[in-house]
Length: 159
Image (cartoon, rainbow, N blue to C red):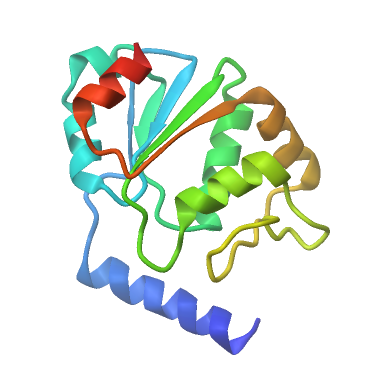
């Protein structure tokens, strides 16, 4: 493990302790759509309180990192074969570009070392296998709404 990777992992743990995030995701009643709010935790909370949205989505969650978080999304998609669409909205986490990395993964996949091709973040390396990544890329379509925090616009997309 490189010094930079060790430092990034330690910094992440410090951030978790200093800035605790209440919720990672909320389960909905739908099966085919997921909403990813990136670093917009307040947007995630508003979505979780919307009966209209939560009645139609399988899950609404956040994405803070360009590696572990994306691995978790791939695992979720793999375990939910009915999921067909992910709406990526909200604001990027500064420095990580997790939304950009998720879009790059969807468009380009990973290289032989698990690095997301075309990702701009500092450590866009996944533990997911090439096969799992390809299943993810075939199973879902991603709607790029990065930067959108208007609940009304997200509600229209979900419907």
